[in-house]
Length: 561
Image 1 (cartoon, rainbow, N blue to C red):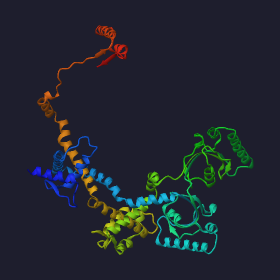
Image 2 (cartoon, rainbow, N blue to C red):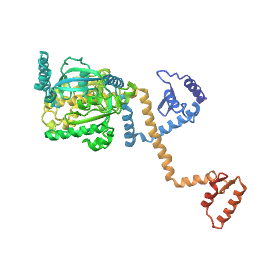
Image 3 (tube, rainbow, N blue to C red):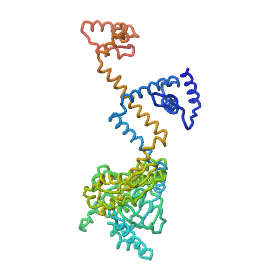
Image 4 (cartoon, rainbow, N blue to C red):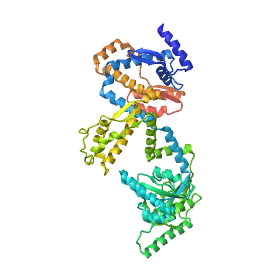
């Protein structure tokens, strides 16, 4: 009666699909309550339209109960406490948690931003004042003051390239005066691109920081993106320091190649025989697809000036030598949906992923009312010395480590916990000032704790995560108990197998059978021939293969084994 009533209620709810915020308890197995929502989710997952063996709720309920009972038995046997189980489940959980620990909205916004930027090529000049890898506050302030003074000089009317050559710490400034040539999205580090694409043409940016140091930039031009291009080229090298005769020889060679093209010679064959770029010569001069900012400007411009597939340029000179290029294909910027997989891949591989993580952690800190007491760091600051760089710093001798350093939600983190973290991580320290290294470790420590706090609450925040994790948990236990009690036991229990076989012997016996070769002939002449052949087989004068070859390949004879 109780089961029938349960099925009536169950069928009604499954038919309507209406489940409230608090799902009712469907059953209790041992001390565990199983919700109707859990059953409904698993039932619908395993009985969708694509299922070959769809079952009604009553049929599936019996399987579900048996499944849960076996899991409960595995727990009673302590299978969920073994190191193997704990490690396996934790591995699954880490993989399952990854998509939940990423700000998907920020990721989508970054892809949309990158797509918008990909529609343009920009020309910018910059000045760089470098910072050490782990700058102290004093280093940072000095660099900022210096770049601000440089910016003031340009605003007062001094030429950007002149000031750049005199002050910039970019290694290439003496050759280019700070000119970066045209570039597009994913060509520079993200903070640099963010400023460049948001500065108006002709204007000078405020100082901004990247991993290299402080920059200012001037946006010189912004044009519609050229897209990407594939070409083949023939290259005649002219190394620096060669004589005038050698220069004339190189020019004569490239002109000879061009003249050959003019009278119909094959571009690929000429590249294979004459190009000094041997890596591309073997493929007829073809080089991979490229876009703005990937080649030297002279080469890029000559390539993009070609209009029709198969067109080739006149010989042109670059810093490296003489070139002739042939257009193979061009591609414009695709739609957002077309570009999305490529954008996502590039974002994941670039420093944008770091920026996205920082944004996600910032949101979590707001959500969990993160607060900190940096005054509590004084005990560690005072003890920070050169032993941090040597890897011999010890936290055990410190005092005042019981003060609250930070709060994440309801979790209070004491200074002593961070001191232990510093002791563990100290061997990575490269900062000149030990206090700077403490600050960097503190930032990493707080970020890791915020992520860990979020990960612990995934089951509360996301029902889908909770149920998939429960499936992993129950699935591992079901496999383990079935392996222990059924599959492995069946292999080792030979006496039990023999007894079972004897009791069910008739279930494994076929009725009387014979092995035969049946030949059906539509012509009487074929039948006579087959009979004659079989008599020879019986006497050992002919083998079966000879019969098959002679008769069974005929359209009038059908052979079945």
